[in-house]
Length: 275
Image 1 (cartoon, rainbow, N blue to C red):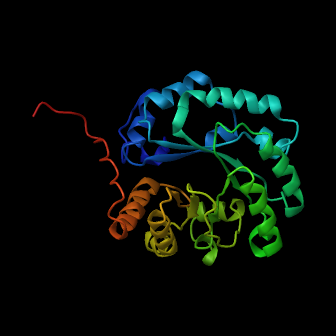
Image 2 (cartoon, one colour):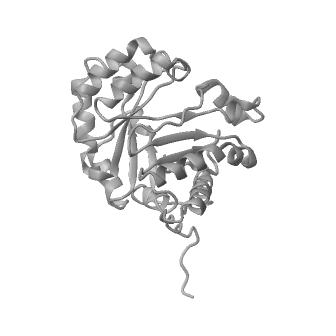
Image 3 (cartoon, rainbow, N blue to C red):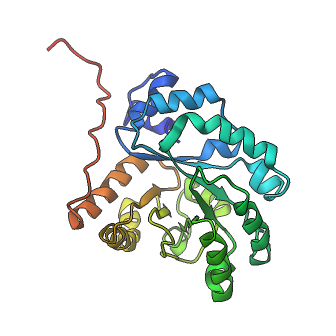
């Protein structure tokens, strides 16, 4: 997501042609969740334009299409997977990880299906799995089962931290909408690889969001000290200030780990002048 309507004219210049929008977002944040790929495989020329708008170190975490993960539940998907991998090939190293988000009904008993699917994936990409069944975190045996399956191919486990969001009843339309859609997942903060990925959902209230991510500031700093290269995505129910909050999170981590590179300066939303 890099063209959120509420960002236009406030955080990002507006109007912008489609081939410029990602470039402006990339001056705010150095990674993006490719959530739109869940709904449809993008055209290869569109993906090529994404590569043109970003530097080689920019990170795309691209979600596999729902036909693979939700409709066919990782079975009999060779052709759909081939088409998807061909479409994203222009990204090259920018494809930081391919994100396999399985539905909440995908339970510990389904891990053998996931293991078979992972074993068939090409090693030209790195993979990260997001599960939404609480038993994977609550039940130690299920945790070990999933970790073992991921370890066979060096895949990461993406935690989706919704604990702050669900810590109090919703107080806005955006929070009420998210309340019905987001999973109630227990907190997990264990990295399996050198490229951990975290998804964090805060609240409309900035103070609550910031307080809730204190845990992740410490964890991320420790990962950096261990030589890992984490990617953290910060969300709120309406995402209106998500880029601003992401930069604030980065600044808090950098205050503890000064070796972390600063983020780029955002592109001005003001039109250029002669003076």
